[in-house]
Image 1: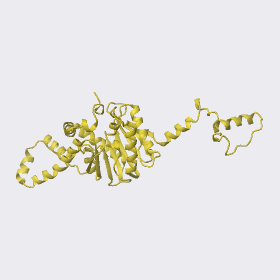
Image 2 (image 1 turned 90 degrees about the vertical axis):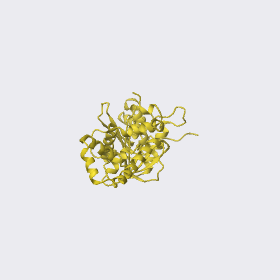
Image 3 (image 1 turned 45 degrees about the vertical axis):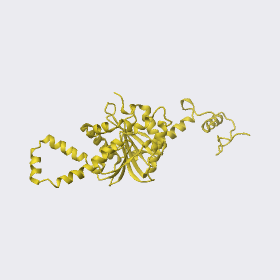
Image 4 (image 1 turned 180 degrees about the vertical axis):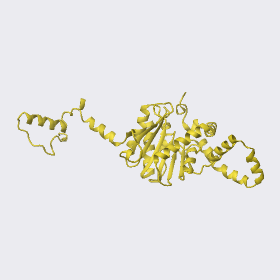
Length: 316
């Protein structure tokens, strides 16, 4: 089965028909709610916060944020998805207006004639209609149009993998879109802010490309998998403004694949060595080792100083 992002850009794939189908599916709403609650657990917010919902779609995730007591702003590239969100946001007002004209006896009689299954469906529909966040039509790959330090936290559910799929005839690249997204997300979050992005990587290369783009932007990053090794695996990229070890920011992280600035520094250090971990010829470690060997042979060697093994400038 083809992945949606391989077929069309998101603003074209999620047209009026697909947007309505996506929002009305009880299975999708259940999965979306589960992943949003998981993201909130990973954010571990101690108080009501101002949250940015990236790729908010029709507001399914925003509904969970609102029910949890948070204020949120949604951003999506699909006009059809946002149109559904607006309709769901306005519908409770219309329903409340009609309710004032209903007679209490008729209301009670209506409720008594409904069976348990229909009551459950009505409850789901009523809950799904509660969309209260502000909505923005924008492309994440072009950067986030918010002032520095605007948000306490951010979430993204099943959205950022779309940034990796670009038109082959376009001048934009996946790396450039990811860089603009994470750079501006870093700026939009407050110092110490966190973000959780659930996504479906196409392969390991795409997963690495996304996580490395976040690290280059300055985030401390960690990747967590739920149901790893199964077809239902869900990948969460947890980010912390300020960099460093993400395991110190999120509680309960055991056996988590941590991807932060240490990986980059360790890679740079390893590049200074030759094969099998031996010091690179001409480097400081190689010079110090050579001097120790000469001392062991009884030869006279100059004492080490801060200039030993230093890189000398070019000769003119």
